[in-house]
Length: 304
Image (cartoon, rainbow, N blue to C red; front, side, top):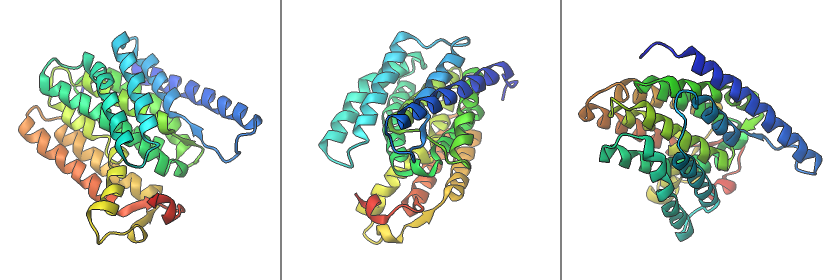
C-alpha cells in the first residue's frame, strides 16, 4: 500500500459531511410536507456526488463517465422495484451501455473493461435491491464504507479510493449504530457504480487488482442473490428458516469477505491468484446471504 493520501481522505470526509447535512435538510423539508416521520435519510446519491467532487482534483471524471453513472443509477433504481420478471432483465440490459461508459477510464485491456461493465451493471442493481430489503436497519451505508475501505486496500493507486472512503464515513456512522440513514435504492445504485469506477481507476498499472476490488462489494451485491437462492434453488431452505440477523452479524461477514477480497485477491499481480480468491470471497458472501434475513422484518414481506 502506498503512502496514505491524507489530503484526499480529508477532502472526501468534508464533502461527505456536507452531503449528509444536505440530505438531512432535504428530509426535514419532506417531513414538513407530510412525509412519514419514520423515514431514514437517503444518503447514497449525495454521498456519491460528494465522492466525485472530492476525487475531481486528482482525477476529474469525464463527461462520458458522468453520463454512464447517471444512466446506470436510473436503470438500476427502476429495475430494483421489480421482484422478478422480464422488465427487470430488460432494464438491466438498458444499463449495460451506460456501464460501458463507466469503463472509459479503465485499462484498455478487454477483460478489464468486461469486469468493469459487468460489475457496474450487476453491482448497481444488486446494491439498489439490497437497500430495499435491508435499508430500514441502517446497515447499508456501513456495508458500503467497508467496501470502500476494501477498494482502498486493494488498488495500487489510492488517491481516488481514499476520497471515496472519506466521503462514505459520515453516512456510515449515521446509518449504524444510529440508524438514521440508509443508501436509498437510487443511492445504492449510484454508490456501487462510483465504487466500481474508482476501482477501475485505482487498478491502472496492476490490472488484476480490479478483480479483488470489485469483489469488495461483498454483501451489498450478494444479499439479493442469496435471497433468490434460498427461495428458488434449494427447496430445503424456506423463508421462515432463514436466520433473522441484526447489523452486527452482517457487518462481521462483510468485513471477512472484504478482507479476503482486498488483501489477497486485490494485492495480487497474477490473475491465477486473484480470480480464485475473489470467487471464493464472493461464494462466501453468497452462502451467508442465503441464510440471513433482516431482523424485525416480517417473513411475508421478504417473500414478496
